[in-house]
Image 1 (cartoon, rainbow, N blue to C red):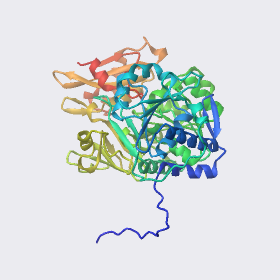
Image 2 (tube, one colour):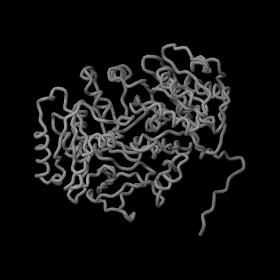
Image 3 (cartoon, rainbow, N blue to C red):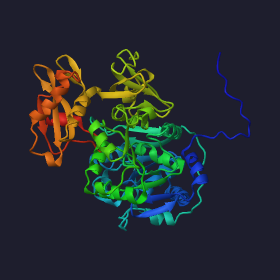
Length: 545
């Protein structure tokens, strides 16, 4: 029996799932709510809506049409939020440029995405000047500045001045909800960055799915209309995890900090009463280590941690300050949020509290998430048996831009392959135990680098740690631990102390003895990607054996 489409009245409106639809409820219920940019600017949602229309007209005046690509190089700002809406609402494609890549990589992404116009913060003009002569498609440029920097020769002008000259009424048309809305590039640790892309439909459904997942929490990790939102994941990275769209749809007060400076972030938390953020563990550690942290009340702050594994020790430090910290999971290819590690009310404050917060989490609504063996058969949900994490949801990238071979590998068998290994317990919580490429194969066993990192991070002298496998003639590989000590512990702790700490866990049956590192090196910093993740490829290159 075949399914039949519903009958449609000729006069009925089909309501395509377009990004412009995310504005309706906020404009109806919170038109006077504020959007704040650092100490530079604040305006209402009503003004925000007008600015979106001005930006739409400005881009049309620059001959930007449906299908053209608008690239943005900026820190987190009100301008970026305006681009999140106005650019795709025109039917154009927003390219969020990772400004932390090398100039050569930035050039590659702009040319590969076929950018037509670039909106560029004055802070990046030096990089821009290095690559300007090699841009193949981008011929128009608009300056973004907080300091009154004059637009260089060949620029159309400065953003605010051009916006003020543009009409404040712009009609954003309906079109196919499957039209591409955004493009950005993965910060993978091998090869050239790969372009991922998302449609209007995918972004709207991700917004709804993430909102539902956050709002359904009865107590811990819940997002609601009284929250004040500030992103601490760059807006160039997976749409700042999609949370600016969530915050805008919900009509929340939003605070954009510009470049991430701990003192500035802490000041904004205090003055603007920020209650909801998200970041990688490195940023949280940086904030909690700042001298002014002790002077700010963080007890009303909710924080999603993603991008890298969250340790129980950092979680406990945050909880001691009253921060409601918990893990979220996703990838550039998944738009990104797939799961959240929210607690059941009965588990808050119990022995399950910290261990649950650092899990990878339970899937959002509309996410089908499995752990599978090599034959794509489901692993049992016993919290022990590991397999590759594969997913389906309506907001996963459908491929890599101009890269059919990598796209086919990503979607082999009709499921998106995350390249993560993990297990699922009886309560439905996923725990990622490692990346496939980071598992340490030693003595005939597979040892999780993340598990060893978690154990070492529990030592009170340790600030940060990375564990990788290095070649060994006898065992195949052996774990090497790179440890950053807390500032007041440098020179007081030796490698044998850390090794004994791990060995004690192994002797108690917590891990295999093969997981106890033979080598522990103390370093002042760990290699990281442009978005703050540990760059284990670089670490392995630094320590080949």
